[in-house]
Length: 85
Image (cartoon, rainbow, N blue to C red; front, side):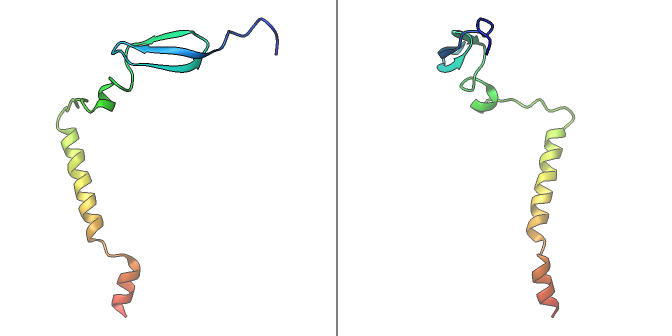
């Protein structure tokens, strides 16, 4: 490696979120500030709101229910073959 061209590595760099959460990682920056993390992100906290336009989410959920119920009623090929004999 060439000397003098690489940034300084900080093995105990602090990450600070706006919500107050802090953790330590290795980085080339000694301190990093972030606006959102896994402790306050709506997806991970379960407070995510789905904006439904034209009922697309409901339609998708209905399709999932249909396929799940159809899979339950399907008889495997091996069982059907034995039943025919």
